Length: 177
Image 1 (cartoon, helix red, strand yellow):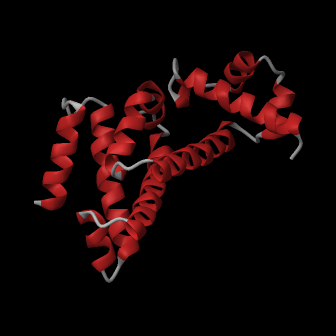
Image 2 (cartoon, rainbow, N blue to C red; image 1 turned 90 degrees about the vertical axis):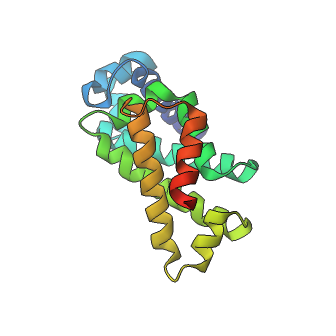
């Protein structure tokens, strides 16, 4: 990939994220993204088929960022995700809560599951122990990841009116009894 190609693709993703700060994914148009990126629609379509293919690329980059954060962090994956979502709250609110929220939710479950699996290979916390002792570690990771993302989705939607620290306490109580 050439420098110009990569730069333009990143510019489109950055504009997509910028537009997500003000609109739900379901309301965003290609023109909104192009206007923010200061590009013509033909340039957008040179890189992406539609906004869903852009969302997939965005999720890929989000996954890479979270995996890097997990590798460089000493915190547990749940705290990492909560902190990341808190720092990008509106972005997640506008992608998880719209009519297309299931797309990001499913992808975030997969990302969280992969992070938990990698974390369990090097750590000995209680979740990692449960994952490693399980006959079905991948299923355990998916189960935890789905629980984590459901809790976070309810927090983002304000169905749960808890402070961040309370989320940690809830998760630890649910997981560890």
